[in-house]
Image 1: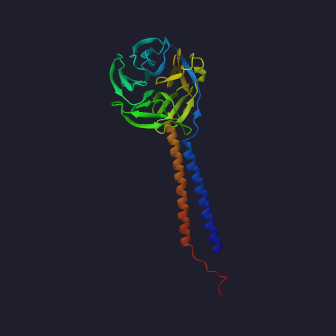
Image 2 (image 1 turned 90 degrees about the vertical axis):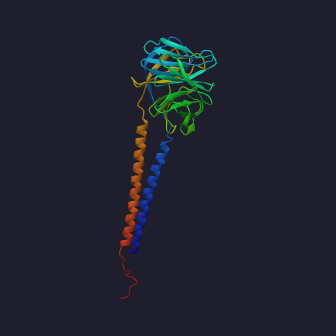
Image 3 (image 1 turned 60 degrees about the horizontal axis):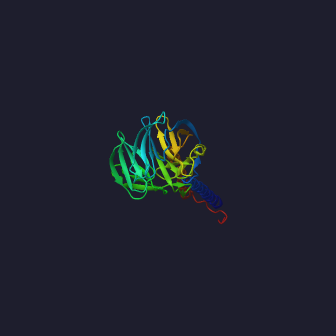
Length: 316
């Protein structure tokens, strides 16, 4: 009987070890999910619009059938409204020669425009292109978007800041990482829900970034488009604008002659990712509960198992 009791204890210990090993693999798998290699997504060009004039594009936005485009360079910076059907310029606002215009985003009925090294951002009335107010900030300004709560801003590093839309004060920052490595030169931004689309300066890629973790979720490579545009190394991909009516994205670049509406192949949304991770954690907790139950049952059985006399040692 002692032998059978010993075997049961060994069996119970083995089961616990196997289950513990299984749950450790589950946890390891879930940990690795957060740094999974970003998947490359496909895309297709849906529409192409020729631009009336080229522009050193720094920012792109879409609203009410118009594209708003900011152009950089000292002495040549401007803000334009462009007809979404023809590509013709509807109106244009020149920017003071002392400023190098950068990214833009739409906030209510105004446009927020960054400047590159001047540590100044402008709030511009969208109806008449007049400057309403300006904000000061430290460092360089590159790209900007509005996620419904914060102004999200890049500065050419791997860091992006989340700012109060009323005061422009920083609420918090995150670091952008791709397969666990920081991503420098984050440029133009576009916010879509919990997702941030971003250009990387001098690279033919657009990243999809989780706005909470900063991890790159997937990327697309529009090299087939950019290879047909530009005449020098500065004429790079730059400019992303989400089109709510179609669900696609308008993209262009510096001194490009066209803008392109693209559709990205199915992308796993942040909510889907969180749902998957939540399901994995539920599975891990379930397995852990089974382990605890088996341990309790084993303990209970051992306590309540009657002792069997050892007849070998008993005298007749």
